[in-house]
Length: 305
DNA sequence: CTCGGTTCCTGGAGGC
DNA sequence: TGCCTCCAGGAACCGA
Image (cartoon, protein in one colour):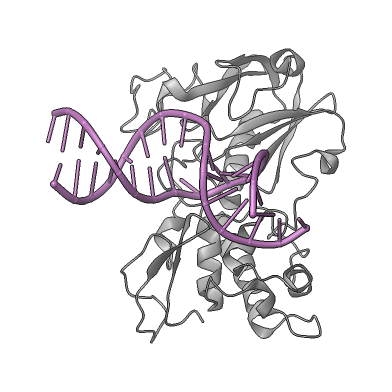
């Protein structure tokens, strides 16, 4: 699924189209995604103005004028796209509708999986924001009021990897005593909110830490972060910042809201590079793949120790 | 509480 | 071309 950088890219793509617009109609083409959509979802959002778009972990937060907020998680294969039926003249190569003025469908998208359509109106112009999700692992909810941190989705989330809250001391406190492989701990949204399989693999490679290392082994006996944990903290911050800057990674389903691609996948050091030479200068290792918790982990057995 | 395994769903890739 | 198996960016859930 889209991890944090991809969701942030989606947010930045949707914001210009959605902010300030009124939801004229919310079209639900099926009653559920991964979970049932909330009771009366369409009626509760129609007529509301969109104040702004935020992101928390891998969730998109759409703030509405009545204090409610739409929470959207893209799961593994969810994506949003913006269609401007009256204006669009730049249908993309390879899109299903290449007649100017008509809708387009970004590469690889199937209209059968367009599950939710927000019909927006702003200054007399209509545009549509379409949620497409083939695997339907995504979900949406409506949060009333402003107590977002108390919402069940958000209550247990850990620190964002984009701010000062994620620090060596924070990681030391959370890792201390844990026998779990550090790979699994980094994927735990209660510890760090927003990392997924790709960026965990990349961060561990950058920090030179073997994915099977017990998380607690990176913490000193007195509870202070060890040098490798300090390096891991830096690696996480850097890889996430670079990926956001690159517009995320485009693999399979992820695509930007305008149909273009992020390009961070070209900068992967180990993810999906099994059998290739480790890119670390002077390292003679070969990227390996193992399974941890049923997921693939990519790493260099030589320089990650 | 932690941990590992399973599950939801569809589609793409690769083997034969 | 077709059929089969495996795998995929997530995370809730269950049982030990």
